Length: 225
Image (cartoon, rainbow, N blue to C red; front, side, top):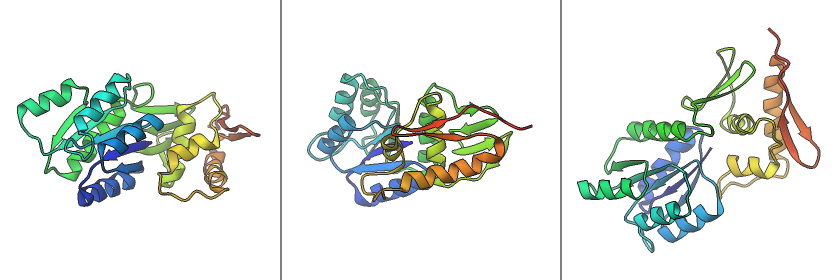
């Protein structure tokens, strides 16, 4: 899942990016409102973490423009503006949550999980395929309630395939979810990650089928007892 962080404080931005990356999210970072508008126009995100006091374009204007386009992506405001009027204005303009600085990272991470869970695909907290279950809150994959150990990017692969069951997922769509702007994506990187996930699902009778020239498809379940 992909998160856009809009924050001009370099130290805080680095801390947020590190925490979200460790929680298995792909993170894009911009430092001003103009770049935020461009990113939100050209990319799909599962969550936006938005400061208000931004250079070039104010964060509230970014939020208004986002909602004017009828985007439903969840927005978490992080700001030093702590008056009641500021909080009410942020929520009225379309923010889903509002945190004032300074704040504790564990609370920030909990609010991120709650917003992701609330807006996650079909609105549920998990996705299933036979006895396979992806828990979006815990960021874990289970088979018959037993954890399946996957790396961060392997989790992102299976999450995307589960979210689009019955549809082919292209390499470009996987790259968009797995890699941020600064990541160097090798020509065979996607094949490597898909191969690793496929091998880990084989014992459960679940296959990731390659559709030549198109991408990958989570195949029907032939799940052994």
